[in-house]
Image 1 (cartoon, rainbow, N blue to C red):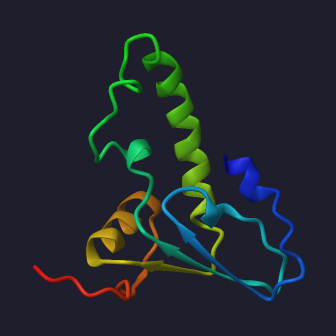
Image 2 (image 1 turned 180 degrees about the vertical axis):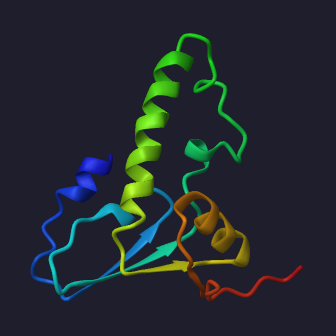
Length: 116
């Protein structure tokens, strides 16, 4: 999936706004383009802070998944350095961005009303 986003032709745009929990922050831009990425969360499956699906943790997939996840984490960290600005949707996500990507992010809460 990461290669799909790296191959989008975005040359005609001055500003790119990506909406991401995984791959879209990795789009490639040219000098002079502004890339703002709104991050919902770093990929949970890569950073092990969610419930692992039974299929991904099955013994016959585990060796493959372990290697693939390691490679995807390297790509994900590198891709998170590409946007000019990272926007988090909460303070929790902001702390994850700092922890996993080593970058700060501005928080802009989603424009939804939540009744608790």
